[in-house]
Image (cartoon, rainbow, N blue to C red; front, side, top):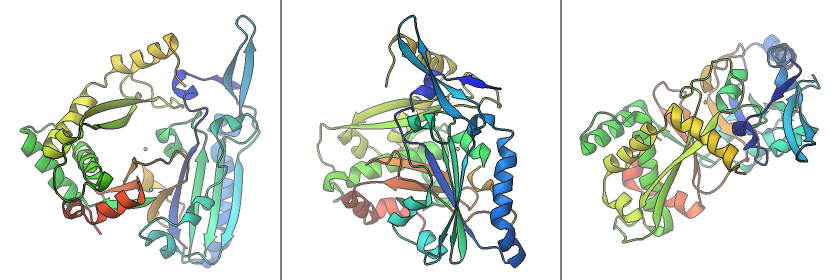
Length: 354
């Protein structure tokens, strides 16, 4: 393998930031393992790259003489990935894991915070192992042109709200009951709860009074095209696109979780193989500019997941499976006043697990 052509799915990420995720561990009890840990991880990275040649390459370009345009591709030239060993002796596991709000220093624990197009000259993959006073934070950067979330986690959670398995089940039951159906999934119910709660607490709407508003309440979902095309499991790329739905903000807040969840359920049902193919076909006609806690390096599973600063904007939600089976951790990037209002929202916090 020497060259991989890029698809419209991949090219949409050129001007955006890379995928950045990190996992937090306590230090292993064995001193021998502590002494060999960095060498072990560096060696494992080198060996793993043998099976992922695109990640050891760089982005390349070629000029098309017929129309004088420029095309991007992955040059599998074995230029290498980046491995960094950093020390943060004054930082402890509890400083990261137990903080109410994700500390600013966490963003410095990720390597290669560069736009994806920088992959023309910089590594497409970076791994940083930061040794804390009592643990390790192992972070990974993956160029989003080269891989999506599933590819990223194949290779290897800013405020976190945790929803236990029991509370997720209650939200699901409530949503299905209100909507008079059994089609609403746990994820759809939780997403609806987040959608309603954020709008209820935005713009100081947290006084439990329904404000008459003409504002549109929109929600955007990243849709994976892999199972919808379908694509083979071995496919390595970024086959994702955005699906959206909206309603009047008053309609969203006046009606219960079941109404919002059903709207999301209908959006998901519309995402078929035909829809995914149409996305790419439309791109050609008119171009437009995922097992998190399964990582065990020999001293136990991670206790938390955090992400870098890339693609952070007000209203962005990132959902991770929780360390506890069946639970969900939500990394919420919100305006400070909205975040504080959410924490004072009794209905929202009843479903959130401290």
